[in-house]
Length: 139
Image 1: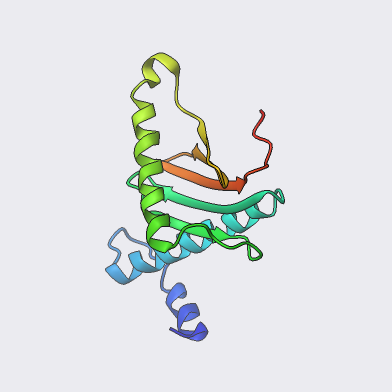
Image 2: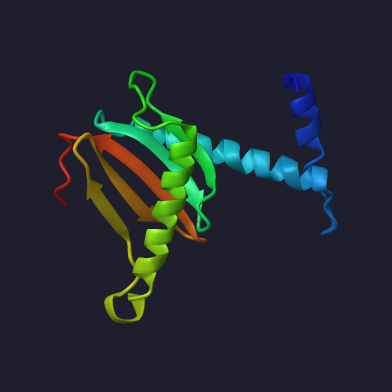
């Protein structure tokens, strides 16, 4: 789809009733993904040690995913999707103890080559961030 077609499609996004077509739903999803991708790009700019920022739904489906341009990703697309699913599952498992411990806010895993954080967001979404191995994880 070229730029002009995308702009034309987006104009059809706004409806006055609740009966949205599948095309409108796709457009809304595309815009949400674009907004989430912009957020991920902004997160990458927060600190030089941030390598990757992504957002996934509670089922582990990646909504947005951005790497810093100057780094070489350590995992490929399929592995990234798998990692997002595992992160979401682990976050949901931690939620089991929330009645006693409170809602999980984040977790950090430290690997030999990278550090990864999973951060709970609103509406069943998770922010996934990876850092350079030497990044300070002190709070």
